[in-house]
Amino acid sequence: MRATAIAQPNIALIKYWGKRDSDRNLPAVGSLSVTLGSIGTRTTVEFDAALDSDRVHINEQEVESVDRRVEKCLDRFREKAAIAHKAVVTTANDFPTGAGLASSASGFAALVVAADRALDLNLGEDELVDIARTGSGSAPRSLYGGFVLLENDSDDGIRCGSVLGPETWPWSIIIAVTSEAPKKVSSTDGMELSRTTSPYFSRWVETHDADLRAAVASIEDRDFEKLGELAERNCLKMHAVAMTSRPPLLYWSGATLECAQNIRELRKSGVPVFFSIDAGPQLKAFCLPDNSEEVRDSLESVPGVLRVISSELGEGARIVE
Ligand code: DP6
Image (cartoon, rainbow, N blue to C red; front, side, top):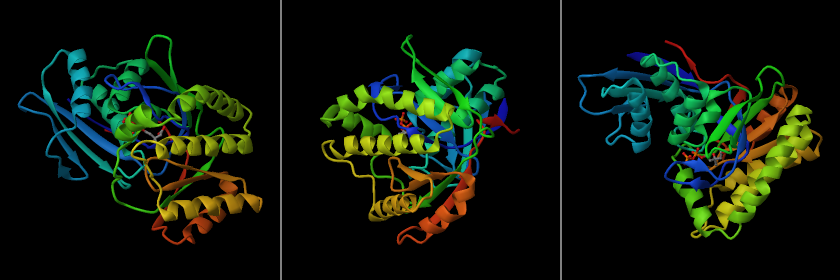
């Protein structure tokens, strides 16, 4: 009743920000992401009849109170297997946890894949997507590799799958880490605040589908420039919604903005590159492999950048043990 899985974080090019149903964690908008190849989460799940409660260890430390979302995910597996066994979940990230590097996405993706195997359930992809989504709205995207689309479906749920595998259109992703500290306002709280207080939230939702469709079309056409333009603007739209929430959410630091300007300058000088920023101060730059060294060097030179992580596109979540 034990299995280990690895999942990689993903970064959205067209963002998920806001829920249409907070209790069921259903997103207000679809999203499009790339799965990373070089950093990841490794999670072991072991169900054990002798335990009286679920236990979670993150990065070698037992957490005091287990996240309700983890228990909810485990409950779904217990229901499917018709058992009451509690579980020990041991998880480790090889990158900063909770700092806007999508640790919840890779964490929940690894958890569902490992739990499914630990109980030998062999659930279908749709069920794994649905359980991962109850943990974190961005987690289903880490079940898949390459370019991944998550959409609301007509049955009041979501569907998720790969648009293009990681080998078909190789990219480089360069992450400028400007802080290793956990973010002050979680994505979950931030997007709820935006939904209830930002005057721009309804326009964000109304205009989102057009961004998503255009981005999928530019992946199909392998149009890097067009996709970059769409993604950078969509990211800034998301932050405009966050910044106009009450109280305003400002996820950037001075170094984040310096990095953004650096990428724009680089693009002006002829390098095809664009950036995205999530609910934390790290900046993610996207380019083609031929330009990755140049982009890396450029971000490394920005004051306030602590370190730079480079990645290619990666695979979806998978069992390793
Ligand atoms: C800014 O998936 O962490 O990274 O569903 O509440 O767990 P919950 O939110 P989460 O939100 C991710 C928000 C984002 C944009 C994105 O990844 O699409």
